[in-house]
Every structure is written in C-alpha cells, then in structure tokens.
Length: 160
Image 1 (cartoon, rainbow, N blue to C red):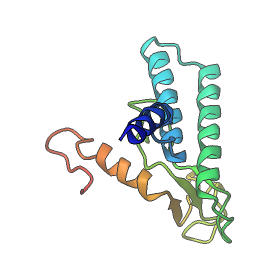
Image 2: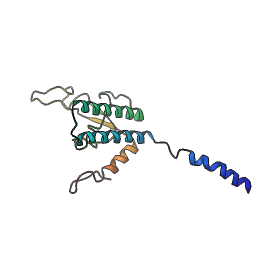
Image 3: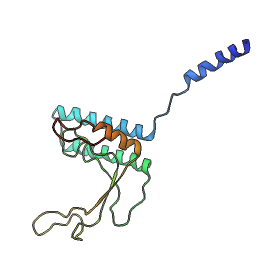
Image 4: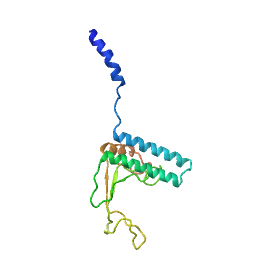
C-alpha cells in the first residue's frame, strides 16, 4: 500500500507538468491568421491604412501561405499557376474577407483559351477558367462553424 502511495506522489507532479496537448499546425496557422486580422483591424479602425500597411498585409498573407504550404505540401499542378493563399484580404469588411483557409491554384487559361491577365478587346481581363482550393478537414470544419451565422438575418448562410 505504501508503495502505491509513494508511486502516486512521484508520478503526479510529472503528469501535471507535462504539456496537455501540443498545438496542431492548423491551430498555429489559425492563431497567426487571427493575430494578423486583429492587427489590421486595429489599423483600419484607427484610419491608418496606407501603402506601407497594405504591403505589410500582403507580407502577412505570404507568411500564412508559407504555413499552409508546409501543412498541405501540395505539388504543382499542370495547367495551373503556383499555389496562392485563398484569403483575399485580412481586413475585416473588405470584399473577400473570411474566405476558406486553403491554397488556391488558378488555371493558366481562361474559358476562351486566352492567357490569364491578358486584356480583351472590351477592356476586361481574362479570368481563370477554373480554381482548385486545397485545405485540411480541420480547417474546413472550423470554417463551416465560423460561417454558420456569417451573414445577416434573412441571408442564406453556409449549410452545416
């Protein structure tokens, strides 16, 4: 009986001091993303958005792309450009905010076979004919839950 009691006394501090659970790569990505969103929300609220801040926001998105590239390790895809972060912006309220966390591969050509980015006769630019978005199941599930009530009442939200 004394042996069990002593063993429990020796073992309990070890169990208490061990880390509960290391953060997953997705958790670290989300923490970095949320920190960047908070940073740019503060700057936006303080009306301090300028060219320097926009460059910092682009650099933050590049860093997030690097994290997702490491998590997803997706190869290049024939007929598609290199992977880009699917998030268009880290500024709350901007069109494109809150998009699915993932890597987006845009087709090299448009619907009419023209090269992406070329200007048409009407002045419009050629858009990719297709996109591939790659994410993880935990990131997709988190996105679904975050978008359960994303839009105002009366608008359709993401099906759960």
